[in-house]
Image: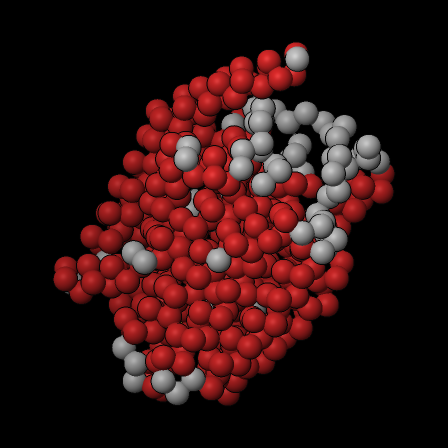
Length: 428
């Protein structure tokens, strides 16, 4: 039987940081998308709704492919599953953005979005699955750091991408960044691996209550707790994705897109950099906090602040710094779903099938992506973004109530039941 020692402790941090880099390499596929929307609209004449449907395709496939990717990683040996999935993702990411650069029809753009979604989903599932397996003692923090690579990674390249788009066109930006991101994933892939059986025994006991049994994906899908988590995930994710996809159009409608704000940078450029950083910081911060005070209480704090943030954007969003600060608070209070929900899922259902089970829950993001175009329809029907902000705020407050009044007692009851069922097997 293997036990954790100095080499394993060092290796798990290496694996964590490599996972963060992998997530950075797929961050632009989502978080820099808004930079390409208006240039494609101007160059190709496609409507904003048509272009944003490509975003929905990407997010949907990026999430819905993760259970299959996670199942493959869980089924293969620790030294085979992660590198195979990361390498495959690198190839698909590069191919997809090259397709986007040459797309002359909206259908071709949709094809690129679908391929990039498949590649990103494989990378995402693998890295999150590795984090929950390598760090049973600091699961919230580890998943938060991994997810931060996806949330904040685009902050490093927002300004270069926008400059390349302005100077050479959006097609060049798609082409060169696609090749670069894919190449780095291929270089990292051979080093990635999951922990061996028994390798994590002897770790410090976590403060958060852990599963007494290892639930299979089929058992998870039959659990009401899973579907409660799923519904909560959809509600918060839908509001956050709306902000992610529409931050550019919102700034334009407020006449702030090209308004100089800081060192010659526009309001939108500053907002995008700050938003990416805040979105990334939220994931390890709230993950770390949840390791100490519990997942549900942390959810209540984060999503309560999120609801307030949408109200601030509605009131102060027309002012340059008001827009930047309000948008930053929104990104800071929704990005943590990608650390809190996978951690909660693994706490409840165990680590044996953690990559698959967390990926099943992650598909809620794909479901919520289908709601993103509704924000445009509601804005067009009402003439402003205020109704969108109100609905987003209400959804966040509803999830706060669900976390404290439904999830918390239901999780405790589930742990008591599984512990009681496991006791006879242990004593026997």
